Image (cartoon, rainbow, N blue to C red):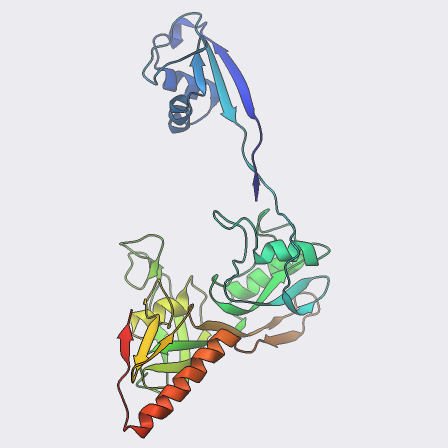
Length: 332
């Protein structure tokens, strides 16, 4: 959460002949160190006065002009502890492992100041790591808001740096369970496609990018439902939205993913199955304890909403078999 503070007031008086006749925005920027664009914004907001009057950024300063700048102080980032129930799988003085529910944002950001996992950790834990940033203490990796499953958070600075190094060296064991659209032709495989910012939308990731980074996802089929496939995916790398982007790129987007596939509903034999969020679950996370130096591994069962979708797929697939098989029809 951010805490807005009072504005600070600065006063400048034109005394040097060399400052005349500079533009108001140029003069203020040179004298205060505030960027010219920021000064122009302050002028437009009426926070820069010349002799107690509002002037335009093009105003030419004159001898004995008194310029007053009301500059808002930097907003301070304050983490607010909140009594939010969380499922703790393991905790010691160095780290905590949690089972993140779907729909929970990991750390505060614009539009999500409260109700995040970090807000909950600030309440439940006696201490948090001091590294990461004021609103992201101890965060060494994250799960998307609508992805559920196992996450580790450092509570100690030494643990933080050790876990970051393990993620960097790709020695962390991460296994995901996902429901993807369509029937995967093979029983297992590997997707090796670079991932970077999408050319058309910088907020999205894509395999079609100018500056992609190596990304490898290994997968195998768990169960087939005709119009959908339940798969297990393991990360060889850890790029942003990697599983979602990779499976979308091969024509089998994660069901319920509104960003990389928009496959939110499947209709089989006039029975509609709705996927309320992206059907992606971080089932297993294993790593070397940063202090005890022992391998530890944690797992999380598939959450109820995903189980419910699997039950519906099973029942419709079984019914389709009795009719000789029916094609799934996608509705976005």
